[in-house]
Length: 435
Image (tube, rainbow, N blue to C red; front, side, top):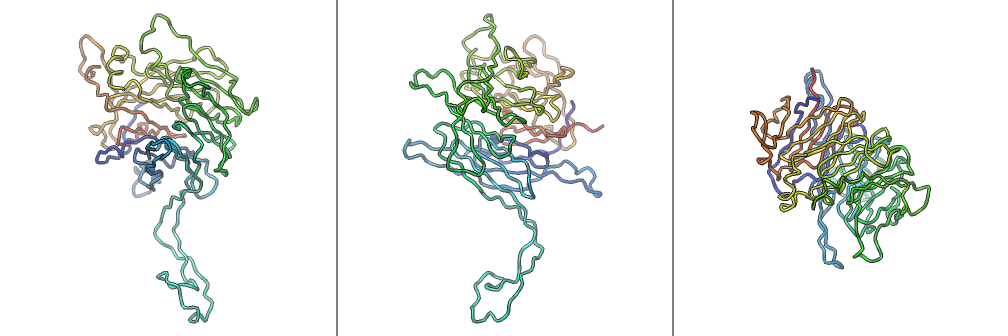
């Protein structure tokens, strides 16, 4: 599971530069990041050339565009942030690429296309674009296509707005490639990609009296192969699997996944740390993975009463929950992802650490994404955290971890061992060491 540095993008730090989502497209040739400033930056993988045999794999900026702007809701007197909450690619159907991006309220469908030719020789206007005098036009010209420098254009094709009262936390493209769902704290909507002015509300957990509210929806995702199945997770640590064939409103779930709590480990923080921050189906569709504050769990869709695998991400923080509550870190929402073959999983931690777990060998590794070790082709050294007693030379003490440096967003190439890790305002791309 050794990883070496492929690339790292750095920028002068400001709040708008904080990366808020990372997503590879279906082929892995493009990688999109969204940030708190409402921008989307797309990186494209370089093709290997004879002159630069090692350049294969490097990701360079392909397109940058402003996806969302800050808005103001005058009725509620609320500012709507421009921060990009999620990006989801659509499977490629033609030369152009399409992606969905969302902030708290509005989802947009973007088309990213290339232009390397332009038409010259118009009848009604000169080369500089000015309209010609109709009386001077005596012959008919046939425009010709001339080569030009490559331009990558991002244009908004659809805007899906006004369907969410609460903040959107998830979007997920369905396997029928025609519909997608969007989830906020209390509702999940189903959209058709061609229709912007209406959506179907498929889950509504809002109680008649808001004082009776006990849980919120934290994440939702469509099944990778069955277009009628989706799951959503809750702040109570439960996951519901719903089947859209059963009813138009999926308020009654088909399956309910919950691990019984061990009464001996119950504490003031139990409820907060059991909240699920991310749920992801495996590529095979047989399993799903959930991330809570301290662990990652893998569930078999055929077994609801407990997960089949549990991985401790940073168990050494259990003794620090009091101070993590005081500095609000306990509410951080870490994401998780599968590798292309579902044999390994990855999730982030503090101090710019991220964790990888091999499901076959049960080995795990902690790696660090930092500027100090981000020289291209450098090997990453495994890190270890010690909790007490004598500290070994290479270990870092749990008391000296930096909780401001956190890796919330990671992505894994769908076919290769290439990963993208967002550490605050820096994007790191690592690839498996090539022996």
